[in-house]
Each structure stands twice: as structure tokens, then as C-alpha cells.
Amino acid sequence: MNQIKEVLRLRYEVGCSQEAIANSTRIPRSTVRDYLTRAKQAGIGWPVAQEMSVEEVHARLFQTEQKNSSKMPRPLPAWTKVHKDLTVPGVTLRLLWEEYRQDHPNGYQYSWFAHKYRQWARKLDVWMPQAHKVGEKTFVDYSGLKLQIWAPNLQDIAYEAEIFVGVLGGSDLIFCTASKSQQLHDWISVHRKMFEYYGGVTDLVVPDNLKSGVSKSHRYEPSCNRTYEECSQHYGFAIMPARSYKPQDKAKVEKAVQLVQQQILARLRNERLTSIEQANEKIAVLLEDLNNRHSKAFGCSRRALFEEVEKAALKPLVPTPYEIAYWQTIRVNGGYHVCVNKHHYSVPNEYVHKMVDIRISEKTIEIFHNDQRIACHLISDNPGNYTTLESHRPEAHRQQASCNEQELKSWASGIGIHTEQFICRLFDDSKRHLHQKERSALGILRLSNAYSDELLEEACKKALDIGTCRYDSVESLIKRISLPTDSQEQFDYQTPTHENVRGPNYYMEATNAD
Image (cartoon, rainbow, N blue to C red; front, top):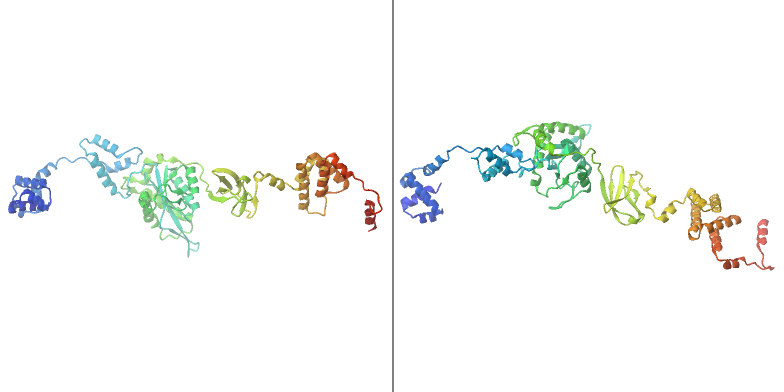
């Protein structure tokens, strides 16, 4: 507009050609020609144009187009209804435009339709770069502002509670609750409360890169906490963490956090709450007021929109809540045990020195190797003690562990009556400690493995006859019995009678004299 008068001046006062005017004003020759043609048709020369304003000149030159543009305006789409319909799975902007053209054949083309919708969507209270399908995503995050919890005396602040916020992608229904911390236990607990509040579960949950949820952030394949993954499998949702330092990935919950801070936390700033339970009671009342408030974006409240379009799209909630369990990775020690909370739990001995994953729930300890469960124990509260299954021991250790008096006597009775009598006599010896007698009895009974039950039975019979109950005596007897006949003859050698050979009677008499 500013150059129209300059074009007329250069033409009618200076007398420049159209090419010279185009070079001077740096506008196309076609535009210069168009301006001059319109000025000629409107009867405007340079002296006349000099006394007119730019707006007046422009109006005179383009009055024909302005008259043509005063036709019946085309009908505008109902952008609120378009925005709401886009939350339905399968509905696209082009489909809504086609329906609009069916109702209004003289309506706008698709490019204008899409452009105007995007302009309208940018002005919404809850800005969103794209339309989220109902039942598809839940965005979660913690509020930067915390809620003070006071001591019972109302004089000191006990701690500051964390405020967890969740929002559904389709209906913008907000959930918030207070928790003592952002640790794993509270992180799982607030998810359970959120799903119970919504009455269902979405396909995806989009968290921030909180350590309780995401163990390793990554642009394409982040690693999630093992407990959080197990929780997602229990409830049937997938975890899709937002990218680091990309708040636009979770813009919905960013806006929801702002609303919670303004409409809930700001109203509780002067309250002196003494417990999490009391805080959550106050929050629940204000939350319902926030969700029932009319929203200009949808033409209704968040609660009404949720009931209308998203509630039925949620997956049903499982009847049993998730029981939180913690995971550890530990190497099995040489004694085929792992130490959890200062108590030792056994694993099969073939996994010695291997890395295993341990799932610690409220009542049980489960041990996994390559995702296969290899052991399960009830949790014990006795630090320093051992919980061992007999099936986890090597065979030699099983025998060693079972060498108590009752088991050894039972083993002896299975070999023979003389072996049983010998073992009973061994345990009747009051001069030896019980552990000494158990070790001797185990060694004697194991001779049946090296020889046979029959040879041990015979050796024990001879040991009973000579009145001995020691391991070396039985070992000597069983070796002698097991020798071939020609080898045994040398043991039947008779000592010759000689005055220098005293014989056994000499020692018996000496003992009686003492």
C-alpha cells in the first residue's frame, strides 16, 4: 500500500517507464502495470493522488474487489465440536472436513479448514500440539511445589509432601494426590490410586525421567525400573518416558500441574495439615471442583467429557492391586546362598558364583537366573541366620547335615542288627561329646559305601565281641575281613613260646596288681 503513491508519482510526475519504476521500487513489473491500470480505471492521476491518503488511494483502486467480497459469508465450522470429535479413535481432520462439506457445499476448502483449526487450537486454555486419542495415554509427573505437613504440636514442619499429578490425554481429567516422597514405594502407590480414581487404565503411561520410574534415560530406548515394569505388566499398560529436557512431550501434565498449583495448592497454603491422610482429604474435595469446572476448550467440564468419551475407552482395572516388589542383582557365594537384608537364603548348588536376580516382596524372596525362577523362600526376620532347602545342597553336604543321632541310628538299623547295636553303644559313651560321637558314627556308616553292608555288619559284630566302639577298630576289622583267604592266614600266625615273650597274661596280671 505504501508504494502505490510512489508508483503514481514516478509515472505521472517524473515520467518513468514501467521497467524503471519496477527497478526503483523493487516490485515486479506486473504489479506496477496492475497499479497503473487500476489508477487509470479509477481516474486517479498524480496531483489527485498526492492529496489523498494511502488508504483512500488503495480503496479507490481496489473498490471492485471489495464489492465482490461483500457476498454471503461462508459458514464457519463448530471448532469446539471438531476438537472433541478428534479425540475419538479413527477420526481424522480430513474426515471432519468432508462431513462439513456435505452439510455446507459452499464451505471452505480443506487447506483453509485445517489452517483455521490449528489457529483456533493454539488459543485453547490447555494447549496441545496434537489431538490425543481417548484411552490411549496418561501423562504423569510430580509438582515442583510441595505441601507442608506440620507436626502434631502445629509449631514445627515435620516434612514437605510431594504432589503427584496425572492427566488423561483424551478428556484432560486430572488426578492428584500427596505422598511422603518420590521413592519407588510411593511412586507405585500413587499409580495404583490414580488407576482406581479413573476406574481403568490407558494403553500408555508417559512419565518424566524420574529415577523411581526410569533407571536410564535414552532418546529412543530408555530403560525402566524393574519394579515399575512389573507394575505395568500387572495393570496392562506400556511405559513411554518423555525425552529428557523435552517438556513438550508431556505438555498436558505440565498444564495440569500448573492448574493443580493454582487451584489446589494455592488454596491450601494457609492450612496446617498434620498428616498425609488429612492432606489428601482436602485435595480430593478441591480436585473434584477443578474437574467439574466448565472448560471453554471443550464446551463442558473435564468430568463430563470423561464420562462422555473416555471412560468407556479405558481398559478395565484388574481386581487385585499390584503388590510392590523390589529387585536386586547379587552373585551367589561359594556356600550356595545369597544374603538379603542380612539373612542368607539358599539356591541350588549348581548356581554357585553366578549372578542372579532377586525379587523381594512383602512375604517372599524369589530368586531368578536368566528369567527362570530357581528358588523361593519365605522372608525371615532373623539377621545372620540361614534358610536352606535340602534339595539345594550337594549330596555330600546333605549327608553331613543329616548326621544327627536319630538319623544315624536309623541308617544303622537299615544295615543290620549288629551295626545298630554298635552305633547305640557308641552314643552311650558318656566320655565323648555328642558332635564327636556323631562324626565317628558317620565315618563308620560310610564304610558301607567303600565296602558293603554285609562286611560292615560282620565287622561291627566282631567289634562288639572285643568291646571296642572306635572308628579305627571297625576300619581295621573290615579291612581284614575283606582280604582274600590266603592273605588272612598271615594274620593267624601263632607267637612261639619263649621265655622272653611275655604274652597277654603278663599285662593282665600287671593291671590287676595296680
